[in-house]
Length: 56
Image 1 (cartoon, one colour):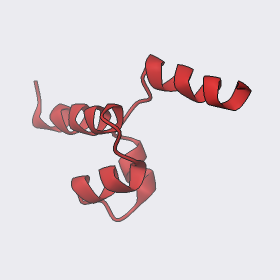
Image 2 (cartoon, one colour):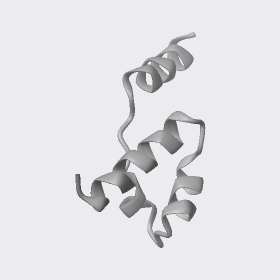
Image 3 (cartoon, one colour):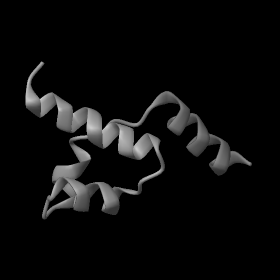
Image 4 (cartoon, rainbow, N blue to C red):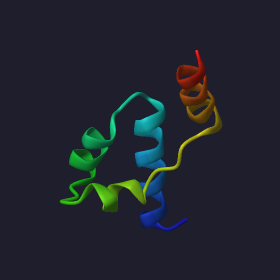
């Protein structure tokens, strides 16, 4: 495992734990939100929750 992969895992876990994208950006030390967005992936549960909120 490479250290860079840990940053992806860290960012994804932060999002899953409820951190918003601005918090992830600050914790990763990125100047650009676009850079931070490359580090996390939306999980299935998060995607389902968004769909539920939109259609409820």
